[in-house]
Amino acid sequence: MPPVSEIRPPAFFALEITDPLFESLSDRLGGVFDKLRGRGALSEADVRAAMREVRIALLEADVALPVAKDFIDKVTARAIGAEVTKSVTPGQQVVKIVSDELTAMLGGDAAELEIGVTPPAVIMMVGLQGSGKTTTTAKIARRLRTKDGKKVLMASLDVNRPAAQEQLRVLGEQVEVATLPIIEGQQPVEIARRALQSAKLQGFDVLMLDTAGRLHVDQALMSEMQAVSQAASPAETLLVVDALTGQDAVNVAKSFSEQVPLTGTVLTRMDGDARGGAALSMRAVTGKPIKFIGTGEKVDALDAFDPSRVSGRILGMGDVVSLVEKASEAVQADEAEAMAKKFAKGQFDMNDLRQQLNQMQRMGGMGAMMSMMPGLGKMKRQAEQSGADDNMLKRMEAIILSMTPKERAGPQLLNAKRKIRIANGAGTTVQEVNRLIKMHKEMSTAMKKIKKMGGLKGFAKMLGMGGGAGGDGMPDLGALGGGKMPKLPPGFDKFGK
Image (cartoon, rainbow, N blue to C red; front, side):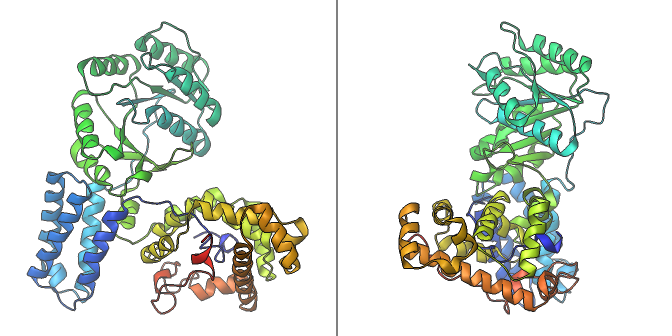
């Protein structure tokens, strides 16, 4: 749980909606499990009927047929046993079994990069052209530099694709990671040997080799991969596949695993795949763990793949650990401390509102946050239906930026004349300015109520963060308000309309 000073309840709804990861599968399974939870007792027929629906949901999510069949067989065998039929809460017990088996299907425990070898540890990146291999190489290098404190060298072995080596050099500058100088005319194996020698002489901890791809799997590609692998003796050989290609991604992974000694896979463009079937099939097909997933185009849009967390998100159980990690990365300590002091005094001005918007966006947006919080899946869809999008956020920020410093610090100064000027400056309407002001007033009122409860500690106590409703110190946010979905702030659903 993050420190109380980092909790930002008032701006909870001021976020973008960007988290399609496993969304359609999560929705389908949620409907199935809601029916099971509503029953006092479950017969074998009830379980089998539910498993048929789960099987259809998996297949519609593009999970490979053999993988879906094996999963359903395992879950059914456990779900029709005494473990469920004699349980006080049989519906919940079935969900737990599905969660356990789903985690096992995804790989069980999270798999770390195995780079604890004599430096430099070589990481060889392989995959088809267009899978996002070069960008992923830079993302992993950045992660190793910033999170693990490793000194990393990147080298492009792609001599076929125009400007491939230059692309990696430019990415290297962006992520502040060194790249091997380009020498025209060298072949992949020569480049790999030169990179290894340079890494040793200059004391690099990790050497990342970005190999060439092809439009499809062929023998020339495999021969080149094998030659580079023999020359570099990589500690990790990671296959990068595009999740958007669905079953094709699984077929590519199978082909590579039969030819190259893979140690893991990386799935890119998971932010654009609401089905997630490739992720669910990959481990079973290749026998190798998924180590990372790409969640966007930005250089920091890379997440470690944790089966238990992903399983929780699919089943609507949330992923609080990831949420806390994102919060710690996004929130600056000095900003959090300053904001906490203002909140404790019941203060909340337009500058604070803008800061909240920016911080929450850095955490991945409203959709991403809600998908990680237990019980808030339905609330996320409510927000989506309200039309909360990037354009709305831009209009809100434009309005705040059109205000003078005095107006931001003292919104009570905003009379009719000032509102007209602000609306013209932001390219919006006076009605939108009024809606933003109303939203701010509601948030400011909430801050004053928190102050009366004893500041943020009182607010945390109300939510049960000191070991209350959530049991392990986390509140059951889905049950707030007597199980009813909390309402969006006034004017939120009309903003920008």
